[in-house]
Length: 158
Image 1 (cartoon, rainbow, N blue to C red):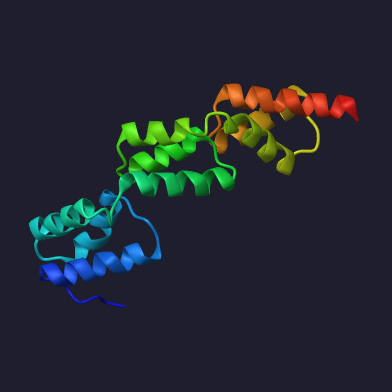
Image 2 (cartoon, rainbow, N blue to C red):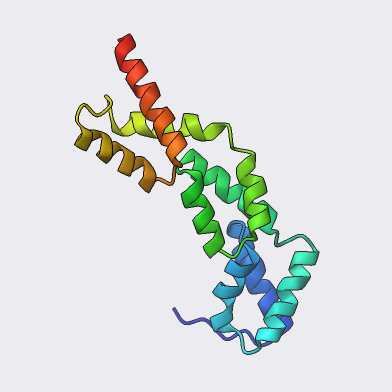
């Protein structure tokens, strides 16, 4: 479906608010979504800055929502941080939001490990496969080590 070009402030604002009504967007993400449809990039920036001043666009709120969603789906801090960089969120915002979850990474890594594996790797190849899996989910090595250790303890208690 082809969209009608957005040529004035009002039409750009309406289009931006329609996006924001569905979910939070970062400033950069919304800019990139609307850029192909506008005739004036300066006007687009002006409208988005106005929405940001009115707190309708908030990179902080977007980041909190995004991190919460990704933590609940079993992703680790490295993968989340990288995705947020690509969405144009400032590093200071990313780091502050991720810091709120610092105690959850260990439990999250173990939870993700338990969903995929029922016992720690018995051979070095099995262990390497489990480590690669958790790395691909974005966990740091210390989280991975803790998850594997907890898995070994769980198996030895059974």
